[in-house]
Length: 190
View (cartoon, rainbow, N blue to C red):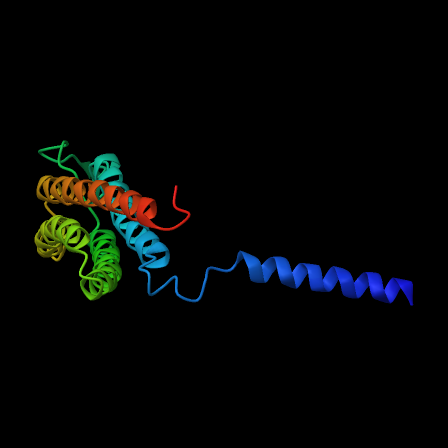
């Protein structure tokens, strides 16, 4: 009987501590942006990582080795030409675009919450983030058109990646500032 009481007490304590750790029911109404804010940053960071990985791939791609034709090795006229796989380029461009789209979705949710609360400062920050994200999206379209070619222009792809990376870096920085400000406004915020 004592062991049953101890087990029940442990279970009650476990559930009570879990229940107390949950945010209050009105946390969402007060404008807690934790999930969507973190998800937006995560998606922007994912896009930036994909850009970086694709740039590393392009940078590390070696010129085609000599081709074998008719039993003899044919050396290329220009051995410094970098050959980028169109399939890899298209996959990278798709992945970058997916992350940008996810970022837009999460930021749109944050905007709706800020507008509902008439939080002009947050809306202004989101406007700045959206401008940088729109710049990344415009350059992503350019990257996609570059990656649809059979012969991907490595220099053009690298230039697009740089502008996408720069825009995402600005968006992430502004987003981090916004999230810090919002967490300070929350009751019990840091």
